[in-house]
Length: 282
Image (cartoon, rainbow, N blue to C red; front, side):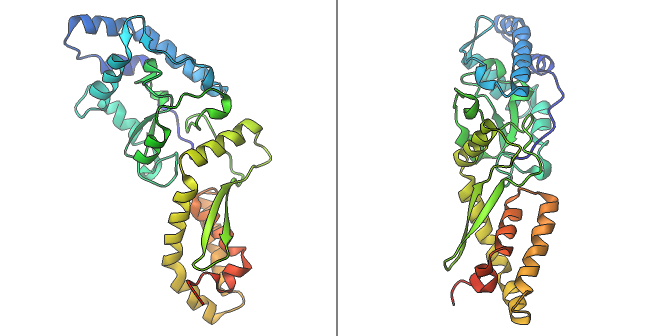
């Protein structure tokens, strides 16, 4: 997961912008009366997230006191996410906050939507709260579904609040068979407590990141195999390893825990791989 800067628009301003063109007088009045509740829910979310206690926020199905889940979902789908909606500019601002348009949850696929960190079906007061909206790819958004965290270990990683630091936590292991492959996993840095380690593991497995990264690494190897063969022919002792070490260093400068960094670290430290294991057969 990559960390992101928190959105700056307030929940109050976003909600009132989204409902600014409601034509039904009764609905408009009920929604307007809910604005303080939305602001309070956002403040509660912020406090809980800062202390890694989002599982303490109770799921609910009524907002202040007569707005239904369906009505709040429509505020998001029709008055924020929909093209031309009053809140669409805010949606686009959050959508565009991911560097290079990449999903911060899987660090690989392109952003396609906004994910509700706590699902709007169970936390309707947070449906348009910016702190609860994260740019995400479709696959990560679908994988998270509408899960309600029951414990601290169940709470998904949040790019606005969780910083995994610069220590190496993403590792890869060379599978010594041909064609070779990589097995990705999570290693625990010394600074992590039990809860963070459990949350990262849950994130890694629930989003299927091991399979995603292994597939990307297989494609990477396909593209560099010819060059590695040339280097091996020129310098059988060190040619392949030195090139892989250079790539590992370069990738780590960009992203210490990117899948490429983990892949090149694993390849460069594997005697079997550097001695020809990169070839499809022998």
